[in-house]
Length: 66
Image (cartoon, rainbow, N blue to C red; front, side, top):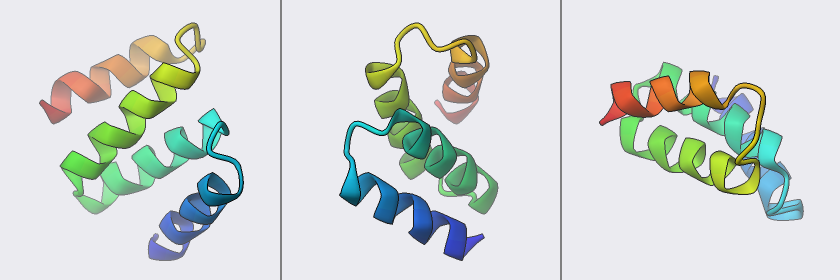
């Protein structure tokens, strides 16, 4: 799981506009119990993709992480 987190961070470093990397990072951090970090990643994902097809699911994660 930590390797996945590192890979998503590297992808974001290469392309900070890569919304899917923020979503992936948020999911990994959520599973690792890193609530604050997951919330930040999910929020950034929705900023980059406000009309994402999975926005309702991501918003549910955000509510849970509040």
